[in-house]
Each structure stands twice: as structure tokens, then as C-alpha cells.
Amino acid sequence: MKYVIGIDDHDSYKFGCTTHFSVILTSYLYKNHSTILLDLPYLVRLNPNIPWKTRGNASIKLIVEFNGTKKELADIIFSYSIEYVKDVSLALEHGRKPGIAIMEYDKYITLFDKLYDFYIKGISDIIPIDYAKKFAEKNDIELRGDRGIIGSIAGLGMSGDYTYELITYRKKENWLKKRMINKDSVKRVDESTFPLTFANYDYINDTPLITPHGTDPILYGIRGASIQHLIKAMELIESNEDIDFFAIFKTNQSTDIHFQKIGNRFYQETKKVVQVKNVRILEGGDVIVETTDNDILFVYKETGELNSAAKLLKKGDEIVAYGAVKPSIAYGKIIELERFEILKLYDLELVNPKCPRCGGSTNSLGKNKGYRCKKCKYIINTTNKSTKNIMRNLSLGMYQTRSYRHLTKPIFLELENNKPSFYEERKFLEMYRSTLYKLDYHL
Image (cartoon, rainbow, N blue to C red; front, side, top):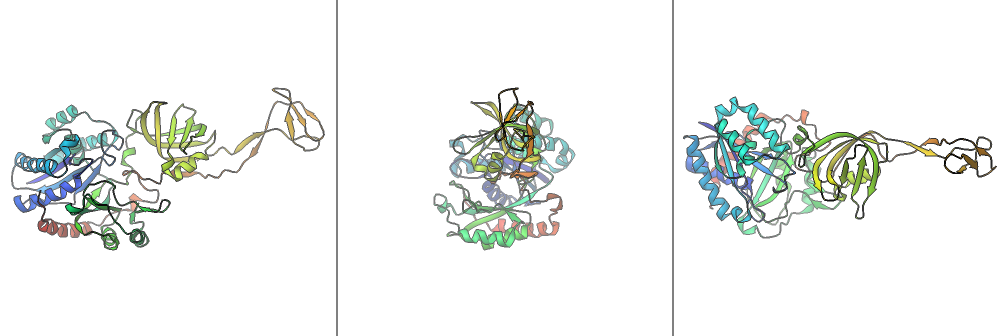
């Protein structure tokens, strides 16, 4: 019988990773319970603004065939889950609360619209655990575990545009060692595979972007739009350690799905047209943009090109602001920008009028008292300033942070033209199944 499985919260800030657990779980189910993976695993990024979740905030979705009941499958998976969080990730010691959710595939298809709505809510809002439990009860979803059930249910509903991520995993004896990835090899990946792989290297800070920084099991992850090019990239990357195993996930990363449903409450994403009232550059380089609607837009120094562009904004400019609504001690509520689109640039400047007699420049005689020519001393009885066009070192269009969030779509990526090859996915899935059967991992 076919089932859809959601998994979440199996990592910790020290060890383990939910994706890592999903791979070894799939291998365990395959070898010990004849459970067949029917599609590539899904890496489902959820609301990136939840303060108590990791920056990536990801759950996993698996579609499998299992010869048994939903309850039996849930018991098998959760038993293995408890072993992993106790012995591998130490998640329970670090306050994590793993969970799983399982549906029969036929009901999953029938109820998909409801699941998709829950998924979008999981990306755009905060979901209370009681709401998740009631949703599961109404829709015949088998649950195990604690808070992780929220992300697990949300993961079931992922649909729409997707990209891929290839993730390589380290041997356990290397988890506490520093990752050593050859920088030049990552640059060669860009030369050979961009734009079908992307976000591999930060050329401003001269550092790879594919490696995490903690002691989790991931060696590196490569994002892209082609399985073939991801495999090629893996073959090009040079490291001082052997890969234990790897997996390719379908993922909602780089799709902008977090802007599908916007709001104005804390930890929601927002997208709105605003007019600039004032721009302030703080000590250290962060930028505050105040709008005529009294919004406070924060553009952090780390956003690179976005921060540089924000410094050039002026009063009267009209932009579309994209960002996360966050609480602030100083301002009450701010919008942390990840991009903005310039719709209109105010390219006029008010200046003192020219002397109508000799064309010289003028000085103001005081408020509403007119102007005096500096050269011929002619007095102009007007209170109006003149306007002149000024050059702006900005252009209309989109400006985006250099530091991509997981869900942020790169400007160059055209998802509507990205139609992954079904044949390519099937071919890799067949190979991946054999890899899972050979995987020898012991908790």
C-alpha cells in the first residue's frame, strides 16, 4: 500500500540532521521492511522567521510503498526515530521534539487541497500544536511525537515549483573535524554548471557557500535545477575526506513560495508598495529606510548589494518592499528586507532659482523673503525654488540580498522554464534505491 510520510525536528544544534535521518531511515525501511521509495525525497523549507527553529527550518516528505498498515508503519518509523534522536543527534537533550505524520496515499490525493493550505500556513505563519493535532484527527493522519508533527504535516502538502539539492554526508568520525573543501574546485563547479547549479560561492568574501558551519553530518549541499549537473558538480568538488553517502532532494528552495501568502503580523512575510520618506545609515553599515506609511525597513550590511542600493535611495522613491515582519525593541515593528523593486526614482532636486537678469546663482533672503543674486545683487521676489534633474546611480528593477535565504528565488532563475525531466528523475531514483540497499549505517 502507498503512504506519504512527513518527518521533522530530528536535528539539534550540536549533532544530527533531519535530512540525514530521512536517508538512513529510508535505507532501514528498504532493507528490513521491504519499503520501496516511489519518488525522490522532498526537502520542505517552512517559515524562515520562526525564532525557535533553526535557520533552515526544514521537514521531509517521503512517498513509499509498504506492506502493512499505517499504524504499523508509524510505529516502526517512530521507534527508529527515538533511537536516532537519543544516540545520534542528541536532539532531546537540546530541546528538540521530533514528530512524524503518515497518510494513506489515496486519502492524501483526496484531501490534497487541505494539505496544501496547511503547507502554505506552515510557510507563512506560526501553527499551534493543538491546531495541528485537530487537523490530523479530522483528516485521518497518523501522528507520533511532539512539536515536530507540525512541520511533518506541513511537509505532506508541498507542491508546485521545485528545484533540487544534492546533499553529501560525512562519516561519523569526521563530524567534529573542520570541513576542508578546495575553494578552486567550487569555482570550477560554477564555471561548468551555472546557472543549472547556483549559490555555490561568495566571490565578495572569497568563500564557498555550499558548506555548513556546525558539527552536523552534512559535508556540503549543492542547489540546482538539473540532476545531471548536480552529479557533475559533486564529481568536481575536492575535499580532504570521503563522502559516506549522498542524496538528491526535490525542494521548494529558491521558489519564492514564502511570498505566496503575505501578512503584517510578526514572523510573516510581507510585500508592499511604499514611498521612501527618509534613509539613515547606521554606524556599522546597516540601513534604515523610513516610508511615508511609517514602515521601518531594515537592510543589514550583510545583504551586500541590497544594502549598497538601499544607501542610494532618496525621499520620493517608490519601491516594492519584500521582507519579514519582525519585532524590534527600538521600533516596535520592522521589516527585514531581502529584496526591493524600484518602481520610480525621484530624480528632481529643489534649488535656489537662477538670476533672471545675469543667470548667476542666488542666496535666500529668509523664509518667504525672496532671493538675491550673488553676482549682480538683483532681488527676485519669489518664494518658489526651482527644480533640476539629478543623476541617480540606481535603475528601475529588482535588487536582492547577496545572502540568499533558502526560499529566496535568485533573480536569474526562470522557474517557468524549469521543467525537470521525468526520465532523469526516474533514472536517478532507480540508482538511488540500489544505493539505499547497499548503505550500511548503524545507529
